[in-house]
Length: 338
Image 1 (cartoon, rainbow, N blue to C red):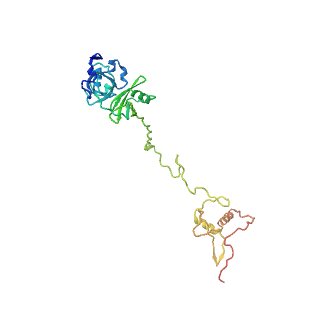
Image 2: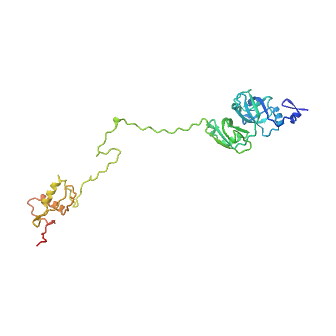
Image 3: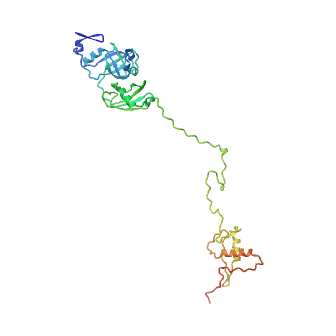
């Protein structure tokens, strides 16, 4: 007794796995075809392939666990491996139909040979890091929902692969930068954390450049200003004792005298004299600078100077008599010796 699948006749014993071939590893080499050749464009969204019916017979006899996962290697680049799942067993014998982005990862062209074998049990993925090729993917309004919907059609992810995400009539290519806990993980019925790396065409914004300071030539520099002049933009410097003097009696202050010696002579000439043991005493006069000399006391200097000035200002024929003014040391002298 025999059955026919896909135009090929199989024995019932072979279908029931009675040929003693159970428990091994499925390995086969096929010619790869794109989805357009098999009129299955929906195959581009995901990582599932189409295998011939003979593969189903062999897998059933080997008692392969579900979901069936496979390792793909190209004949030209044996060091490059990828992983996939199977959607249906309806492909032509000797061929495997796979997405074009998967063929690009393995550097395969239409009709090239690809080696397919059952993959060992892949661990459940816990972390995946993705890197979009174009920064335009970051402008998608709800990237999380779009990515979740796309990854439902995937069975596993392999580090180094470039997957394709279709959204709003546009295809976005995304690199799988890292997977944990292994280089190839299963994403069927698992909670997986997804992180994004900067896109390949991302450019950091340039920092604003500050204008360079203007260089003033040496010939145009202004000469140094005088001590007394006020330079524009600078605060005036403090100068002590720069104001005019004021008198306590309210009269205008006289011009400074030529020397302190002349002031002493004028004050000594105007001061009254008295006798003390036959000696003449004089009141000390202030200096021209208005400061008192060390070790001297001044009594009535302002009155003496005012009397001198008033005597000079009065005309010689003045008949009015001035009131007596206070004069220092004008009393009698006494001696302690008798």
